[in-house]
Image 1: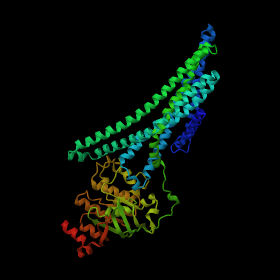
Image 2 (image 1 turned 180 degrees about the horizontal axis):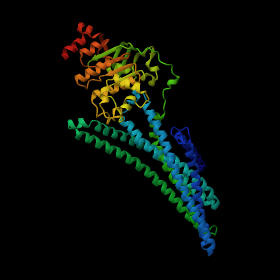
Image 3 (image 1 turned 90 degrees about the horizontal axis):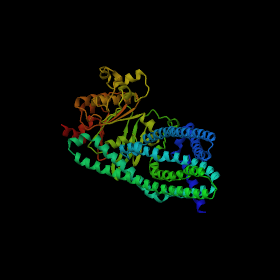
Image 4 (image 1 turned 135 degrees about the vertical axis):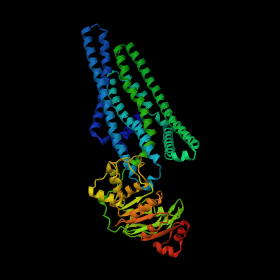
Length: 583
């Protein structure tokens, strides 16, 4: 009864592993042709391996009878079988790697798409190093611990079935002894299951933390150098490094312990086979050649059960990683085709909006309307809620109360792709790809030469690009290290204009520029026709402020005053106070 129970558990487990509905198993079916080839070569390899073992018995028997001609024939047949066995084994490994390639390509593409498809709020729950670790270390674990284990279990299962059939025909008693011993080893991982999960979680977390501190150190290289804080950073890095390697070492050692116990079970099976075979030879039931064949055949039973516990162990240990990656690899893209087109009204409104971060009220009952085609400037002290307010219109902030509208449609009901085709956001630093100026403006989309040139002209880039030897095909290096701040901003403006944005939200984009470049960029933006401009700034620039249709001044999460620049100065309120301080 116990044996039947173990057998039932084994086949239930096997079904769960190969169930295509499992979150990662669908990637095996990405290339069905390569999957079928692998699935056919696995039993073929088992058959040629069994034929190799069985061919030893007649070869040894014939060699003891002194029939030279027959022995030569048996040797020739044996060589053919060996070549076939080696060839099938080679092509089996090649097919596995081809299948792995297709699996990982599909999985990594899907995972990356899933990460990039997250909302701003979801994406920012983790640092960039977390996603880098996921795409590198965790994907590698999926390859070694998940893919190899699933393929390995299929391979040893087919080997087990073919070997059992052959061994029953040779000697059923020895077959039964080895099956009973081998099946016991399958359930060893259950003893270590919780420890494995714990060790795997610790290893994954420690690796992400180590990559995080390394990433911070590299990004903050200038600060570390200028403020001479390397000793403290070095200590943090060494501690995280040690913790990461310690966690990885503990995981590997647990796997080794399980593997060692499995090896002991296999050795017991091998010894029992030799002893039992010797008894049968003594009784005249089998000959010496059969012992050699049996010693090779039992590997087809013992070896699979030696490997299965390791495969199960790997699957258990990687289950934490699978669960973590699952929520990112399940893509739920916006289906713009099924959504209603936006109205031509691109007015932005916030109605009685409240925003709280960790029980702190950042915006308090804000009521504001940014009319289509108008120019707005938002000012206020640091931390007053300026950036939080504008980010509401991009779903980068989430309102606790109230409504945020584009036209008459709630922002939350507008798919991201549709929203960002209308509303563009620029910060102090414009991200630039390591590519040509052309591709950084077009963002790898196709536009006519006329459309591209119009955007370049409107962004004030014509003279700069004409002065470059390679023009639009000039390569930008290292996120624009070979460009000035003003040139970066103008590329960002050209990019937004070419994309057809109707609303420009500009968050302190000129704060890192000198006064002359700041004035040039702001004047450029304020003179773009047909586009709503919402600009956050902390500098008092009379010319720019006079170009705005309305200036809003914020304090403590509220809009305290708004109106034209001249009206607010005459009122001698907050803006007037800012001007006096700046003077």
